[in-house]
Image 1 (cartoon, protein in one colour):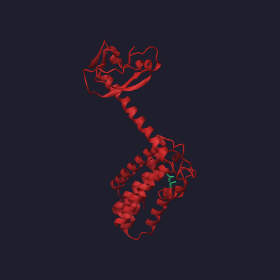
Image 2 (cartoon, helix red, strand yellow):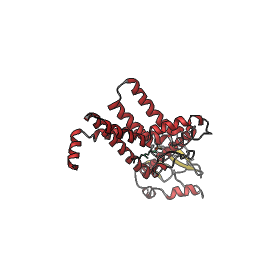
Image 3 (cartoon, rainbow, N blue to C red):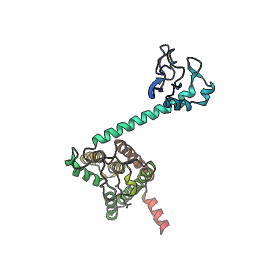
Image 4 (cartoon, rainbow, N blue to C red):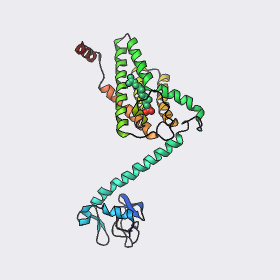
Length: 286
Ligand SMILES: CC(C)=CCC/C(C)=C/CC/C(C)=C/COP(=O)(O)O
């Protein structure tokens, strides 16, 4: 049986899908009819090759019945639009798998401070300092202290909303970590202080969400001077970078974490507790 990788010179274009030849998957065009030297079907049985046999077993029943609109025909059996609909998710699957493979490879290469013996092991203490600066405990304690010390209604309002944002962040990150359960990179040394059980998981990076949330919050409500604003930006970026350099996270954990923290700030703005709301809440409690 000839290889299904054969091309038909007569028609061009079409979406790429996966075909199997000798157990390997290759990109093919769905809308290109197969050449005469090619088999009539993408998933044609190839001798006793178990991979192609499996693929054949999962063929669309519609196509096996020969119904559906045809986009190409060679000898008897046709490629239908249903094939395209069914096979395109495989393309998405391959794209996602490739992205994850790149993510793992890149994260491993960037984990240069994962331990003292690593190539950038001498920078590890600095990275750990950044880790502490983005940890939940100093942020919660610092915000609660400022709330307590603040003698203006405006200051209290800002601090209370920051506190609410920080708590919301802890809860949302914990939920996603518990659902996704992505393991931390193998080269990570689990020597972080004050962690919850869900912090054994890596997706998303809680430090990245917090850095993005607090960074946006500081820029919007507390930090006006340009040099300090630059520092806030720098701190946010460095906290995220340090997670990968320390080997705590894969790159995608941090990118998603930044995005999530950015969105969480929008949520805090939407749910903003005004003095009136606060008075109402306190009145209900009293
Ligand atoms: C009051 C209270 C519930 C405080 C908890 C603060 C706390 C222990 C936060 C966890 C911070 C942490 C270790 C997050 C993990 O960050 P990744 O970037 O490694 O995901």
